[in-house]
Length: 117
DNA sequence: GGGGTGACAATTC
DNA sequence: GGAATTGCCACCC
Image 1 (spheres, rainbow, N blue to C red):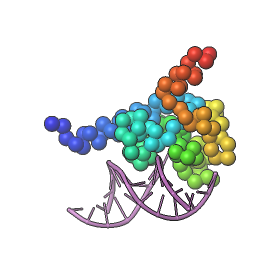
Image 2 (cartoon, chains in turn yellow, blue, purple):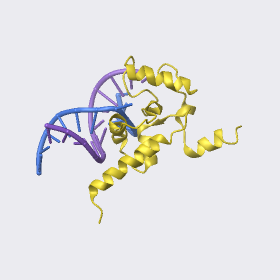
Image 3 (tube, chains in turn orange, cyan, brown):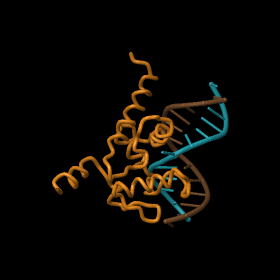
Image 4 (tube, chains in turn orange, brown, blue):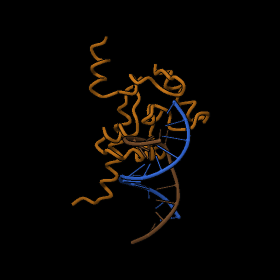
């Protein structure tokens, strides 16, 4: 039987893949990513991965469940996040993003952006 | 094996 | 919307 530490490694990879799957112009919450990756309740793991991972993950598309940024306003990281989001077409109002943008789902994405043309 | 920590979440006031 | 509280689970000492 496989070792349990290998399970942890796979979990990290699954979450990483999910984060990388976020399309430009959309955002997702930590819990949402964890749930999509198949690990509900592992929101903190997503945060740890984003911090530790050296891969070019779109960390700027990851927000808190309350649609606000994960880091305190004014921090360099936060400013860069807002800037990149605006560059991708994501509205940022008073440190928050529109509900429409936050309610991203794989199905909804294809439904809205696919046949929309 | 125990205890503190965290790029979080959900609930409540 | 904001602040406080509790639950959660992997990680580090």
